[in-house]
Length: 249
Ligand code: MF3
Ligand code: CO
Image (cartoon, rainbow, N blue to C red):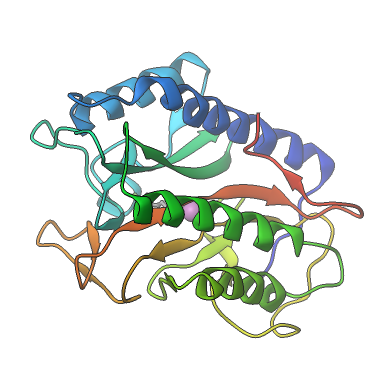
């Protein structure tokens, strides 16, 4: 069941999303070689709490940390660790969730550390562009499949692949609500978009095969072929006009 949000509920989601946006923005200057992913997680946790939010991922289905930090061939759900230290040339994907006044916000960004390879550079650019191609389709009267198709088309035209094992989602009082939003699919299919829907659109894009496997920690998803992966996510609201990107500053 897809839950439409009132303008009052939207205000609360906006608040959580603004904290997510602020964290992802602050990380642009904070993430540097030599930091461990655990140090980055602590920075995120402190900033969320300081802004009056609560980290939404900690404890979610047993997830042990306040953010997911996934490096290079890690696709999503990387668990922050003292032992993982950022180095020059890394791609660092950070996924942040916040809950505030009972409503969730969810966003992700892939950071380039220093000078990265040409392939990494292109992968990050194409993944972020694909997110915006998807968002552009989030108009009243269009369908979920229009978002999926637009993302997949842009990614594949550029020679990369779209992860199938994880999808975007509705968001509100729950982190994951209906509908699911695959990053691959057929235009003009799926649920119709309506004003008041709040959606987390989150392409995960691999340089090689789209297949992933889960590491022994039970969480970290990595590319099956060891190729690089990038992840961008915004929470948006469908309006009677253009989509509102809630996780943008
Ligand atoms: N953005 C991710 C998702 O929507 C993050 C959730 S991961 C978990 O699935 F750590 F919270 F489980
Ligand atoms: Co999400």
